[in-house]
Image: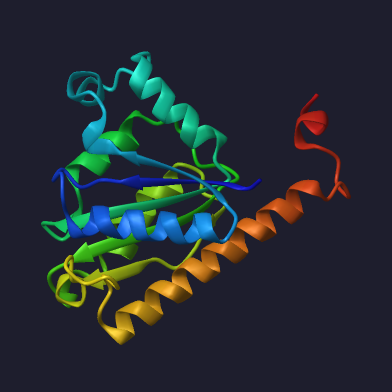
Length: 193
């Protein structure tokens, strides 16, 4: 089964970005993917801030990421960038932690003025970690998200953009799985030997 890890970087116990992470994870699970969810705020603070990858909880989180075929990163927007909590998590990952993975960056923000944070702040950091396929991210406006609504994403435009992004991510995961089974080229490790 193709596995997906959802990583949410909101420091708040209840937030629109955390709810978005749940919504996307639930949808991917319904589509047949194995889904795990890391809420970075639930990791132990001292080892997280110290970048202590030997801590059991931190090591377990990194192992989940390592085992995943795809990763969905969900962050609130603070100061025209992704959350500091997400940054701390990304900083403790090994340099090529995302190599061979499909990645979907998602962000929630209060203003369209910050929509480019995905391309100018978030995506470069993810690519520096070796992303194989980064799906076009999606920036959702807070005013189109209603925690009291069963639909949660109440704006038609926002709902369509999110659906397209998740569909593209699903296709990238399927393409990853297909390319991983094709054996036309020799394994890279054999070529280096």
